[in-house]
Image 1 (tube, rainbow over the protein chains, first blue to last red):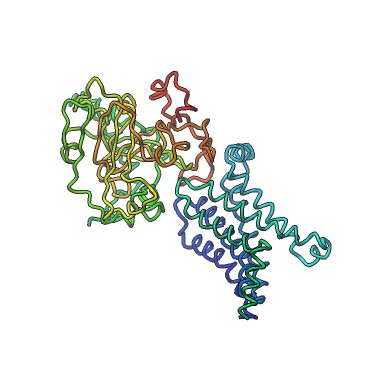
Image 2 (image 1 turned 30 degrees about the vertical axis):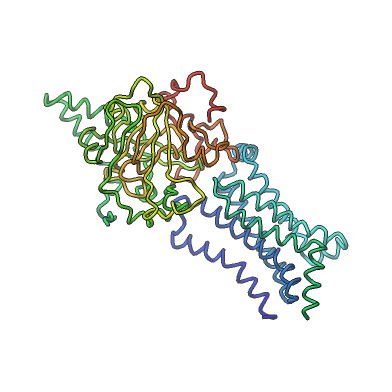
Length: 199
Length: 303
């Protein structure tokens, strides 16, 4: 498993893209294909972000530090799908009609929240390199904790989009909430203490 | 189980041309003196939505992209899940504030009320739209025949409740059965259509067989499907979506680009099959026919 984590993470990150291309080539998008593209890329970004967020807590509980490379890889794929999602919205759905986009943002808070999440992920993706890590020094870590903010924003983006049945976005909300909880020093110490006591 | 094979369905191009042919044939016959009254009637009927014929949404899209939560919230899975839904026999109860209540079979309704084809726009509250050739008869014809009393003010509609055939109804999130309502004057407007067919065929199960409503100036959720009860009432009835989310879906639900949904804009729409977004029209393009119903009303408040 140790050596395989990187290729596994890349595989996981590429599966949604493969499914998407497959659906396009076999004409299996819905009769509302643009919405289908939007939903698929959005869902991929959300899931990969949640996977990325769960790496550290899982490592805390299990002690499997070999999982850690998956955090960055999945996070970068999440940013990639968020970029596709954003591009489909601006360039395909609204076809660069800035007037309409402005109106859509003004009238739809969930669009704005999604856009903020995308900005956060974009900044984190750009500063994810070794060079930026060196340049930002001590500020790098707090900056990259913003990934939790992105997680919360994305959950609201999803939550505000559904018509009535909030069970699915609420489930993601609970997962992100729990992952965030494990990072709190009190809970974190308790969990790691538990593991060490067992060992 | 009777599934319409794709070969049975009239190809759209043929369907569109046939109309053209019939119109030309009609004009040709007009010269002769045979039954001029009937012809004039036919010509009048053909006019409702005739200008939209060039914009028709494909049969495939209309029958595979359905908001019919009784089966599932996944629009593309409704057609499959509705295959075993039993639509015969079927009776509709008409009751409440009427002098002549009764139960009518679908055949009886078809016998009593002459049906016609009408091409209507359908605008979903979610922001997509279609252009659909319905076959049906005005709701007003049925209501007049049962003679509403002097107390009659509203009409309440109820969909079938049959969890054994409709898996979505086993989901406790929503309050089944689906209900809808109209003010009596809205219901009496000639545009409000009781629908039994689509593209010249029997109404498919996934589109609300055997009897549904088409209220083209309102968001699609007002056009209730698979109706089993029509009740004329004194008070404004509660409806499925106003119960589910009262601050987001109102009783009137008139298509209005200037009143956004609390969480999204209604200014534009995606017509299924088109690439560019369209601007949404006031009353979905039926302003001339229905605006007078709402004279003096604040449409922001009565959303």
